[in-house]
Image (cartoon, rainbow, N blue to C red; front, side):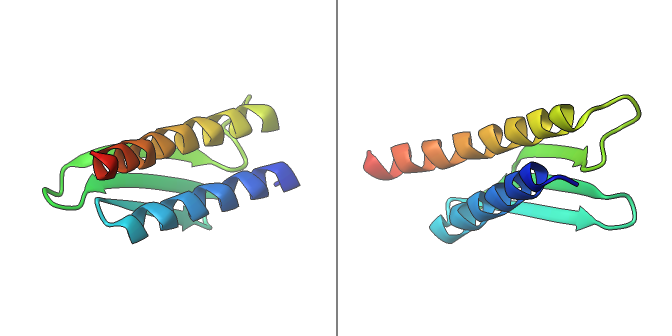
Length: 93
């Protein structure tokens, strides 16, 4: 795992933590060491409705490069960041 992948995972973890502290959504990030898999789920805190369910493997799938893994991580982070933006928008209203 490269330093860039480690940083992307850390950034995603921090974003999930920020969302959980704000309280409107619940973001869960799990790491499975046996598969080197990262699982991210997000829920509406009031209704329990699942809003996001994504996974990736930090070593990549066969044929994937490190840049493919980074692209997937950045896509997951963008999805979670969208929830954070929605949360900020709703708080401002």
